[in-house]
Length: 456
Image (cartoon, rainbow, N blue to C red; front, top):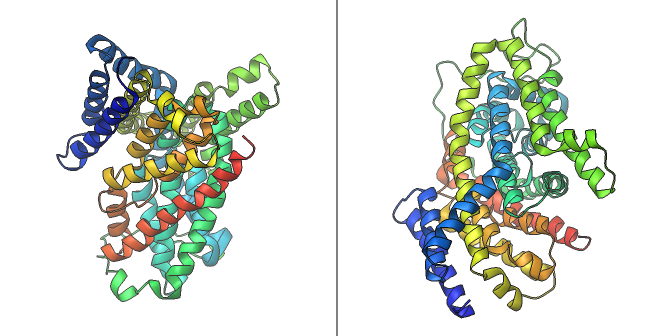
């Protein structure tokens, strides 16, 4: 390419800064901003009009071809589970089993590993009133503990756990087999969530949390959420005569995840079987999960209600699919102009330094843009071409980008304001539980990621 390495890097930096400015300063839709940034980079770096348009379109199509159906299947399963009241009942069960002392950890780990098919805002709106009902049973710091658990569990699940939308997008952009991402994501997310909640709770309960300043009175709703009870009696959550057992509700989703994991393990063991290969392919596994969830929903809600749930899920998945697609456009353009080869010359061949660069880049993008998913996708797209030059495993880059994108969830995040209002926190309180708590998780996550880099 005739353009110098410096000029290409400068134009790449200009494209990224322009994307951030368009989103933050001019409130332009991220979809449009990412496409404009991709087009600018292609033209400025000398690809030419035809090649730029072709690259942007192909990048969009390639990523959707890889993960589009996976995102849709996951969101549709989540929509039906929501309408089956699966989450309310699961939280109630967790409270009875683990009791007040362990419920924050139990609820967060369940959300982050088990419920990522539920659309984030929907999952938060459903789970926050339940967490709020539990909080008074935990004493003076109940609100702080439950808000911290929700924030860390929800945000970590997006980027580390399949089928979280961020995890699917990262795996697709970096060509990481979904089963591989599922296994390594669980290795990272479980200790990260447990340790981050423990650290944040320790700080909050040692004088940092001031109930009189960090909490606010919540208005009493006309029909308040029923509170879980810690007695051995019947749960106060309303039950119908035909309400199915929890294991039946979640069996299809669990089956899908187990199939994907089996496929990954078989691949690592260099064992192949046509039937196993088919059933464990992510698309077929999640399709099996969706069909099973539909059948459960049809039996206990009726077909019309299932159709309503699916329609809601389709509306929710549209924006996610488009954002993932344009993330693919940016990644393809960056690869086409040769940024990966250029950066590969200058970054150390050691594993740690590039992974810290990925984390830092995603963190800066998140602070500027305020979206975990967008910052993770953009950072992964920028750094993906470096992997071949450095011999880095793509799954490490994906996980590091996910970890960095969690840093400093703040006032530009919709999740921040939902947690602030639904959990009865002041803005000051939400900055402690959500912003500080998730930032601690962002840093903690790099521990297991760097440990994995020794073996991968």
